[in-house]
Image 1 (cartoon, rainbow, N blue to C red):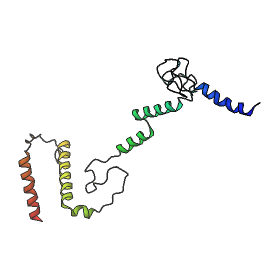
Image 2: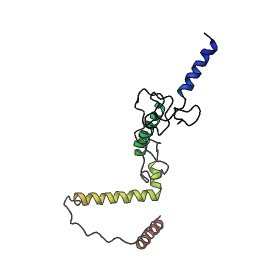
Image 3: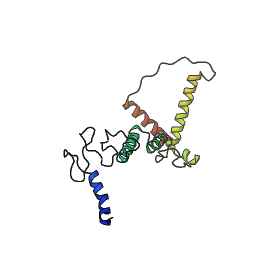
Image 4: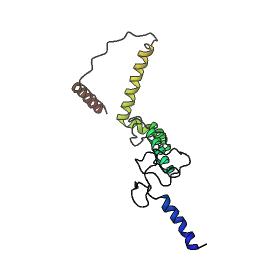
Amino acid sequence: EDPVAAEEDPVAAEVVAAAPAPNGNAKGPGDAAKCVKCLKRYGKSTCSQLACIKCCTDIDGCEGHRALREERRRQDEILAGTSAINVRAAKQRKMAVKPGAFPGEPSLRYLRESLVVWDCRQYLDNPKWRGDAIRRSERNKRAREVFAGGADGRAEEKTVPRKKEGRKRRFQRVMKELYEASAKV
């Protein structure tokens, strides 16, 4: 056998496999011919059926379309929200802290993100935080009393809810309360 002829055989076989179809429907030299099934799109030369991705029915054995099918499957997972990254991101979003949940810690955005160490004296030294805690506790106490009845356990008569005060009056009331609080200190 001639060693030069043996070397030419693989190249010749490759050229024949990638040769355009007889009716000349290839993109250019070395490109695959059009799909043998639909004749609309170009088929993959490495496809076992020389078909395009839409016409290829060899889902498991087609080497030519395997990478494209994997990419499409990955994109579908991302769009459906079932990929590993999407699942982790959803878990992280569920751990979000509502604004104002931890007064004095505006940088805390997610649970288990950092450790908050605080001193009760520091909390009570700040009049804004202290006043907020007192107002919340009084409001919760009133709500418990209304819900469970009066202080003696009997249900109270429901009072008519007072009319909402306007922004201007509320502003004036808050300013007056702040002024009086600052005058006491």
